[in-house]
Length: 447
Image (tube, rainbow, N blue to C red; front, top):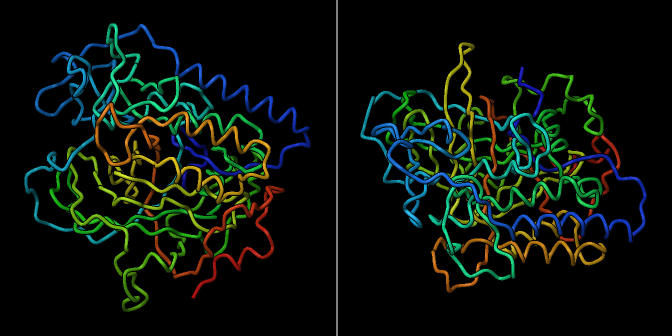
């Protein structure tokens, strides 16, 4: 059975409805959270961890105990571009592709997300305002006020801040401002309760099979080194029949989650062609034909404008849809003694344009009619820390937010194809209980 307790890899989405509260209280509590976050952006840490060769262990890029190989640190890590004296959680690149290895090929297999987290949870699976600092990558090659990088007298920038405060990097120059926003959404009742934007509900939805995002790995030799594998991504509106656990109660954590023999529906619009013999899935429209595995870590590049949405409305709350630019996925691949493949220490990383983040909020119902909409919009706009184009130009205004979502995944099976309705802006579905709505089947219809 799949582990049911979200660890440091658990994410945003559902929760029971909030108790009635006055508009004044809602504004006050959310503003307090935003003010706390603004304070985090404005202050610089005095701690430092200057880069030297001891941070790397030979050609494989091993790191010392102060920068453990996890959460975005690995063989690819090393000196930052700016300043080069600091150790950076740089991201893997296509230039890191290993030499051709074992030519053998395993049969294709699927993985399904087991846990996912915006960066708001620590290693113990608890909400932590500092958790975002320790997951993700240095996406812009620039250490901006990182507590592990001392830059006396200056704050390095990769784009021009659009507010008076500068959004700061996490440990080892990690860019993960969305993780900090994820924490704010989880602790503010206006978003966590009313709209279900919290880690617990989202991971319960994964557990019971309300939705998922499968990826198929093919052309893989099964070794720790493979210079070319194909990865196809398939958004799923869930299992045919959801597990009966109540996501409105912590009791769900005492129950087993989906297992690797249950089949996941696949959204029809993801398919690049017709079904094959015996209902075999064709290739996906979203894929990387040149992914690779090095030192046991899978590296997958995502095309620009990748919609990262767990589709359907059978969960307690609708999953937040996010469009990613310059995205990629990393994960440690291993086959267990039970014969199942698993992905651990995974990270989905990239950039989200300001307008796409706001659109995602509108698609889950946070709109002008909500008294907190203006505050949330201002908060997002004031925490842009990158250029969506991937450029590094301190004279260009920042227009995107960095992200790094930690996850785990386990081997799974794809099932039939289902139609799923697109989300419509400003049509909020109330978060009012743990059971799926009676008309849920209309949102995921098998063909």
